[in-house]
Amino acid sequence: MSPVLEMKNIHKSFEIGTVNENHVLKGIDLTIHEGDFITIIGGNGAGKSTLMNSIAGSFPVDQGKISLEGKDITNEPTMKRAKYIGRVFQDPRMGTASRLTIEENMAVAWKRGKKRGFGIGVKDEQRHSFQEALKRLDLGLENRMKMEIGLLSGGQRQAVTLLMASLVTPKLLLLDEHTAALDPKTSQMVLDLTKKIVEEEKLTTLMITHNMEQAIQYGNRLIMLNEGNIVVDIAGEEKQHLTIPDLLELFHKNSGTILNEDALILS
Amino acid sequence: MDILLSSTSQGLLWSIMAIGVYLNFRILNITDLTAEGSFPLGAAITATLIVNGIPPWIATLAALVSGMLAGVISAVLHTKLKIPSLISGIITMTGLYSINLRIMGKANVNLLGESTLMRTVESLGIKSNLSTLVVGGIVTSLVILVLKAFYSTETGLAIRSTGDNPSMSEANGINTDKMEIISYMLCNGLIAMAGGLIAQDNGFADISSGIGTIVIALASIVIGEVIFRHLTFAKRLMTIVIGSVLYRLMLSLVLELNVDPQDLKVFSAILLTVALASPLVKLPNKGKRKTPQVKKKGATTI
Ligand SMILES: Nc1ncnc2c1ncn2[C@@H]1O[C@H](COP(=O)(O)OP(=O)(O)OP(=O)(O)O)[C@@H](O)[C@H]1O
Ligand SMILES: [Mg+2]
Image (tube, rainbow over all chains, first blue to last red; front, top):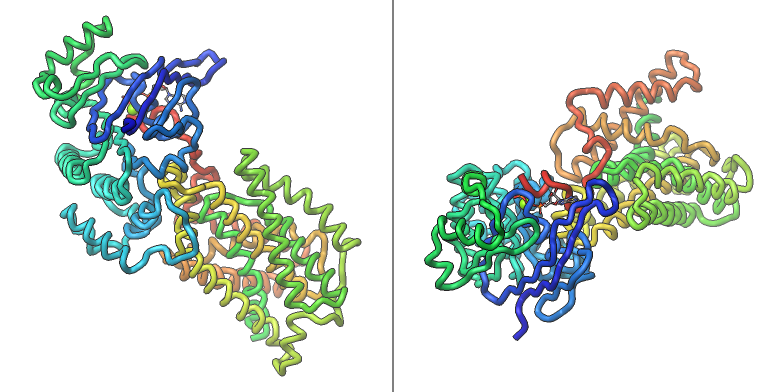
């Protein structure tokens, strides 16, 4: 069987031809297998979000090929790729439409990758399954489904976004520091929920984090980016026994630079 | 009493235009100036067809369709050619001026003595001073009912989420360009239909009748928003009707004070300024909308 996602020699620069030209991804090769839960770590500006955005199709890449289950998607726009990809952004406001109600937002996600016609937007049977899904969050949102989502707290919105991303089972779930904007307690709640959903639905997942401990604790595989290159990629047994000093050592060995540990752990 | 009746009747017709403007202005956060071209377009089409013996209701529907086409042009300029919405509206509006002149063949088409929707209603036994109220009431109610139903369909939700959050919408597989095109079509279709109805009520279509109409529409919307806050979609549309009637009422009162009708546009401009400056009203993102592209650092990262 072909891997879920395959990236071959991906290059991406921004503002080409200006003084600000910035070569962000420098030949990324990455193969993601079914059931992989990959944590991605790396310093500010290393290209983590750019990597994720190029998988989601937010912009065309300059060079290289991206295929999903063997199908070349390099030139497909975001809205086409949405059929296979669920996403949660860092900013809780990014993942939901604030003036739509909770149930309307979920109805939009329910139709991800499907044709939208002139049927009723929120149907009764959907309402029922949204309610069931919201109950799992244990935030009492199942009784407030007609509330504008913009009135929810960041953590609540992020939890709903996560539900929305998995409402139609994605082939790939992309999480870009989706807990970074939350307070520690809420952040832990959303992380626990992430783990629960990913495990129950066996979702193939990419999760960017700034927290080394999280990167080690979650997932079966860890990738470290530095200046647009993958410098660490470990999985399985080896990853399970990894410690933060090991990781710093690996990074140093592979990239030739010393990592400012605080920058990664504390943010 | 007379003033109240005439303001309500005209307010109903004008509210159709304001509702059209609302669809792009508040739902998509786009200020679409195509309005000032599609309004006289509707008037031109309706008047010309009626003068040529076409039944008024067909002429009115033709105005609706012509406005939708005008909307498609602005929408394509904006979404496909990436021209900023303000400019694409101005381009279409300017082009429409010549087209409207071509349609009418002259600057003014007279409808006196022709069969209009108002005459049709009168022929059914309605008193002539009530005919505009009846036509306006029926059309406005229909428009609100249809829009309420449409904006709660799957496509309607997709249009609303596109206006709210384009990147989230794309991430959910919504064709945001297509949604904007539909919104532009609805918006300008309604505006042109209002143009056609108002021409029938006035008894003439005029090439320059579009000037200042966007200000009138925005004033009606904002008056409704200042008076009634935080409402659901259908109720909001109703407040636009109220805003539109109140606007007409204020206009009539100003005229009662022996103000020269030529100076009315200054009044409209001042009224809109006062309403918008009121701290209760929030402008949508200062007229700009979020780019669907993932933005530079800061948008998706710390
Ligand atoms: N749309 C864009 N246009 C121009 N430059 C961009 C764009 N997106 C990212 N960049 C630049 O690319 C570089 C890498 O950014 P990216 O967001 O991928 O980093 P990151 O690894 O996610 O960092 P962080 O940990 O701060 O989120 C940065 O220098 C950033 O300024
Ligand atoms: Mg980032």
